[in-house]
Length: 157
Image (cartoon, rainbow, N blue to C red; front, top):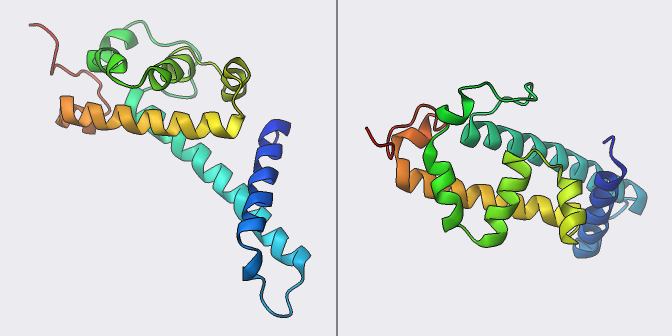
């Protein structure tokens, strides 16, 4: 995984799942093999969610993860609705989106600042992005389907 705090979160999630699913151990199956399978699935879920978050961020913000600094016209190209709709979300969702997606803070950094676990921060970030996406779809319609780039749905002419 590469990050000790992420590895701890994955292990913790696997422990929780092992308690919840302890009755699913098959006859003749060793507990070690059963837990290994749970842990393997937790790691797979971690990578799947991380990749899904990156794709969602690219889709919503139109940002490439390869570029550190935005292009000069990037700020103007993103749908102004993103900035207009952030205040309509829950305050903690709006703050989290600004911090992680717009200011490029890491999840671990934000988790430490807010006193939440990294996993809880990831979950809240996912919910915040989902809420923003829904608001964009309601507000912008087809612009949201195209990544909200060069959107003119609310710009004055």
